[in-house]
Image (tube, rainbow, N blue to C red; front, top):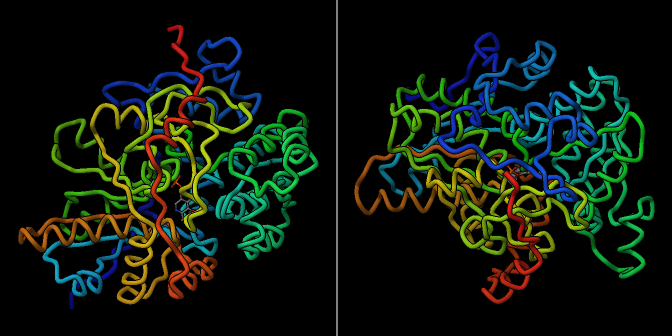
Length: 457
Ligand SMILES: *Cc1c(COP(=O)(O)O)cnc(C)c1O
């Protein structure tokens, strides 16, 4: 019988994360203090984040970083995750390509976000913090953080974008179940929130605003640290567990991927799967692997954004980050893949994109759901709307193989399941969804708000 799933035993889980920063041909530019425009040190970052993550953020020396024993132990609750050969999808497409996916949807919270929530809360606890705070859009990160905080006895306060809180009530219920405090953002509990509500009482909220609120809470509350589920280097570091497992599992399958594909919000599931494979491009053992980041057509920072220093949030509280950005006040269309509606790409990814190691593809909303439906019907898993973008990009590649007759090996990340996003599927099925294109004029309007910094280095 042909093998469908490849699973590592707990004892074979990777014991170290892979830090790609140490091996990149060109290191990412440093984050800058927005006032002085000087590069930030780990101590500066530690005003907002825990110290260990602040050090990991700037670590360009150590390629391998030990996973703490206590974190590994929590990883065993749901890891390894299966590597699965998508025979059903292959047959439906009639493609000679071999399609594999890394199934990060199998933990009860339903996405890859837990891989970083656990170590972030662990380090906060180790350093004597009592509280953590964050923002969340669709709610996957907030849910993961709420659970991880509970594991280590920390209080979690989550600012959830108001509109998604109303549209997707189940994730805030999950956060409450894990004992977190959840506030709709903009809220009246912070200055940033109050300012926005005063100007526009009906503002539906955005990730940028929610970040401003959480950062404000962390900087004004003793013992409280801010945590982020995407974009930053230390998050990609923790997520490298995905690709390191996948590398061993591909070996069990006797194959090596020609193309590695993941959806792209801030880059954590993409980086998590891709970076361990990319190290073989750097060392020349597998030079021709193609890395494809699938972003929504309506939020095209990789294909149409600009490489600039920009803020990570709307109010301009965060450090200036060197990244491909659409501008920090970019207002994305209200697509259902909430986790992909972010204006910028992580610093590592941005540098790698600039250097030609990966490329973005833009996926229209309807194409993403069409691919997600096909995947659900052939593999029995309903994918998160975000993950549907990776599936759509994979389907495009598989159909190219069908034309050329090439037996390429495709590997994509199933970053999460969509069981709490069913209203989105129902809207698609009822024909109520649409595509959103964005004009160059509109993009240029937002890019005009980028601060245009020349770093003093
Ligand atoms: C958050 C999220 C994403 C997008 O974030 P990345 O950092 O780009 O991975 C993608 N898929 C799922 C299921 C998510 O929860």
